[in-house]
Amino acid sequence: MPKSYFPNVKEIKYEGPTSKKPLAFKHYNANEKVLGKTMRDHFRFAACYWHCMKGAGGDPFGPGTRIMPWNDAPDEMTAAEQTMHAHFEFMTKLGVGFWCFHDRDISPEAGSLAETNKRLDHIVKLAGKMQRDTGIKLLWGTANLFSHPRYMSGAGTSVSAKVFAHAAAQVKKALEVTKELKGSGYVFWGGREGYDSLLNTDMGRELDHLALLLHMAVDYKKKIGFRGQFFIEPKPKEPTKHQYDFDAAACHAFLMKYDLVKDFMLNIETNHATLAGHSMHHELEYAVGNNLLGSIDANRGDTLIGWDTDQFPTDLYDCVMVCCSLLKAGGFKAGGLNFDAKVRRQSIDPVDLFYAHIGGMDTFARALKIAAKIQMDGRIAKLTGERYAGWSTPLGRDIEKGKMNLAKLEAIALKNNVDRAPSGRQELFENVLNELI
Ligand code: XLS
Ligand code: NI
Ligand code: NI
Image 1 (cartoon, helix red, strand yellow):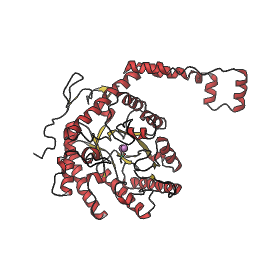
Image 2 (cartoon, helix red, strand yellow):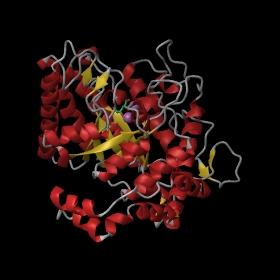
Image 3 (cartoon, protein in one colour):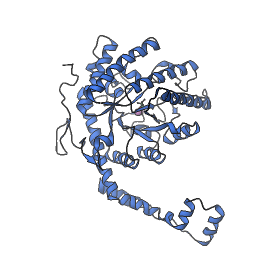
Image 4 (tube, protein in one colour):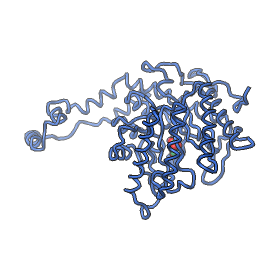
């Protein structure tokens, strides 16, 4: 028997809404169908390696607090192996089908890039074996291009060409191992691709460089035959003052400008949306409207704390809106719902990881059922349609078809006095939503 890191936790089962057992699902029932598809397939839930296994609970004012038995080892590489075992034990007991990682989460950096890559290969072999043994799949891989001091001024946007080269090498290797682990996708989160001061920054040049790196990645992906989906993860700031991938719209503009839009979709994260001054719903609707919704990093912020707190999603209203957008998009294809979330600094026991994920999965399960109810009820869609009824008249249709110009419209306007548009009925919409929740 291999060592267990969660000896007191058995497989988490669905017990239904009346269960009072903390280690059981009350709403997430993997095989239950909602709108003809199992919950498992709707969500494609993933557990991230960095927060679950590596995040010790440190904050800007103090070190980590968590009890992490997988770290007790005579050397770094033994700890890395144990950590991989712990993550797969955790995911198997929880019943999530996917995981996500950064290259440096799973295997620590060594003195040289060659040695670092050798270490990574060793751990990736173990991960491949664990995937085969458990049936758990890789949702996406990524390269950590922000922790090491060499990336202090960014990776693709670094002031140093040598740092750019190092980042390129790291992306190349991360793509290779993601392919080897049959990753469904690959994420680019530009942690330090931004600036702290414009006084010392050549923004146009940095953006050109970032695009060059992404084009190289697209070329290499084709070269090695990696068929996973590329995602960009928007975030407005932190650790930078301004990150270039600010929000969904900024990423879209960047992708369009540099002719990359056909090769990328977006991985939208809740707390990044709120840091950008948006709601998650806004970011998702922008992505859905532009065929860019690829994947979701689910978490939430705290309205009273101004940083990326990465808390577990437990706000039902917010999650309902996420599920409405997801249904509108027709569901995930390559993407999934990754919990990019961590337990609070005072939640120190290994079992807290289970409570956190159970809460997130149950909240989303409820939200999905409500979103399906909203869709089947049809009132919100109908009321929305009614607001736009004027666009189904001959005038509206002619404008939408591009048959009009300013002069023709002026002629119409001169003949018709228009007082005001129909009522927005926001309160009625909110009442219907509340009724269905
Ligand atoms: C950090 C990001 C990061 C990405 C992966 O804020 O959310 O965790 O998801 O690099
Ligand atoms: Ni994220
Ligand atoms: Ni984040």
